[in-house]
Length: 166
Image 1 (cartoon, one colour):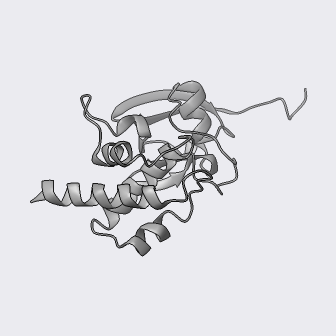
Image 2: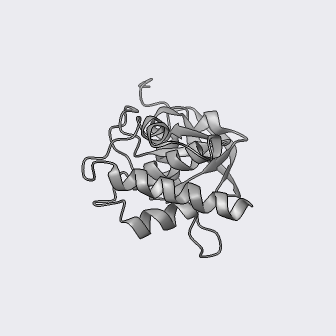
């Protein structure tokens, strides 16, 4: 029997966007593939598959992670938030709303990764400066916008979140 054809299967339990999921994955299944191929949540995009572009960014236990660099088995027992989990009851997350309002996306390919990275950034630093936003986004590539509108959208979302927190 060809050893390359043999795959070890693992049963894992992971919470995705608030829903506990029990799934079977190969040892080498990437988190991005679990999300897109098995769970059919296609908002998380596959870009470089090397961790350089950030299009596949999700949050794992509250931390932004490039899902192309995480094996699905590593998320056993974890909470994973994808872009689909940002809106609640039909209401957009303030980040999503500000990206929409300011037209911070052109082709949209990088947008889900930008949103998830920004969500983590604002969680860690609710009042970031423009330089801190740019640094926070340094692991995410956009080939369309030049980042100006993206930075403005994050600033607007931060202001909205601050206003609703008081």
